[in-house]
Image 1 (cartoon, rainbow, N blue to C red):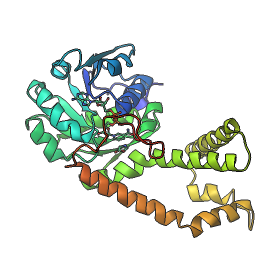
Image 2 (cartoon, rainbow, N blue to C red):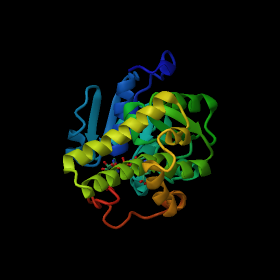
Image 3 (spheres, rainbow, N blue to C red):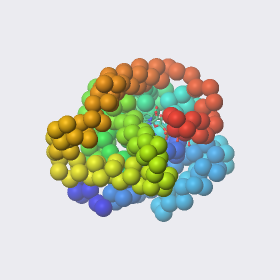
Image 4 (tube, rainbow, N blue to C red):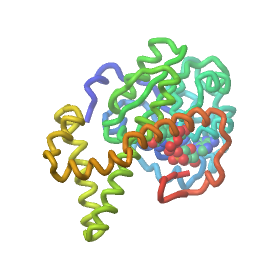
Length: 301
Ligand SMILES: NC(=O)C1=CN([C@@H]2O[C@H](COP(=O)(O)OP(=O)(O)OC[C@H]3O[C@@H](n4cnc5c(N)ncnc54)[C@H](O)[C@@H]3O)[C@@H](O)[C@H]2O)C=CC1
Ligand SMILES: O=C(O)[C@@H]1CCC=N1
């Protein structure tokens, strides 16, 4: 699928992606799907085994394990550099790339919490830096990304905006707005998937086999998503059409409202915002190099 916004406007710039984990792969898959014509794409992983997982056409996957200068090599010649490591790894990445960035190369940070001032200082202060907060539906060009431009020149911001418009909707905000979006749209899909997991658990509780329970949960989430996407109707209106007076939906939803679902989601948003702000200066969490850590929260590293 080629995004019509991009026709004729896509930057013919080489792309370097530092940190080729979950989000980086999501973005690359989305750009490939949208047909974004990068002249070359280099990714940098920490380990050779992670680099070997990226056997994609047109992508050269380097690793620090194989070549300690991989990050420096990747950014040389790149017009766009996406930094997609965990926020607490910036201190390791920045010295490797700061002196090697091409003049005018645009750095896009997708790291949660890390402020533009911090990025600019860490990267030597001469290259334009833009913060973007994407989400994983970008992989299927159905993402929402927050974009905070800071002091970047309008032409550079336009390049980044076009790039992420190929992956879905782009909302321009200031940095405080970006911290809030980190949970709302960045983590938002996880909330929806959590609800689907809980629906499957409830189905099993009511006697369905696990494979049937999984089909029910997947079908409901995918069907509801397709309905809202294709009709463009308001979620409250779509819910109203399901809710018969004193019917089944009314009784089920009442239980969630009595247990303050709305208050719980607001509390979750506040907790996410607080954590996004903390990440600006936080050390690596204990155990953050192990994968995966928790079946409940689904943390990857
Ligand atoms: N996963 C998501 O849905 C979203 C993630 N983000 C942000 O994206 C960033 C990456 O997150 P994920 O992809 O989920 O994490 P991840 O752990 O899957 O990927 C990070 C990758 O960086 C690599 N890495 C670490 N140090 C490195 C170094 N010095 N040089 C090169 N590579 C190095 C790691 O080996 C790992 O593969 C984080 O800062 C996160 O806040 C933002 C929005 C959404
Ligand atoms: O959990 C995280 O910190 C990242 C940022 C938003 C989604 N994943």
